[in-house]
Image (cartoon, rainbow, N blue to C red):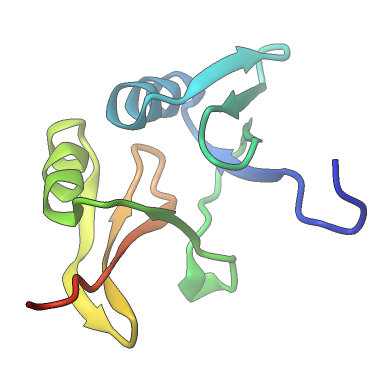
Length: 120
């Protein structure tokens, strides 16, 4: 572990089983339960966990936005939809790339981005 570096992130989840199924199927994340109200995830780029809660994590309410990276943005968007995610913002451009936002089964907002491919 590196001193003073982000090491772990925790997010709320109204339905731990639904989020585990979604992220496992859609992104290949792995989970380890710690009691009935907490599950840790790994194989996600940054380790973290979901804790049982009756609220959601949304940037509009002041929460941080967790952003995933994809080499194939359109394919990832399709996969998110196939796995039950709800597209909150379709693909749009921003300086340096493109991204979309989605809601997981518990209503937490996430984003996925990709670099703009160089032409030529």
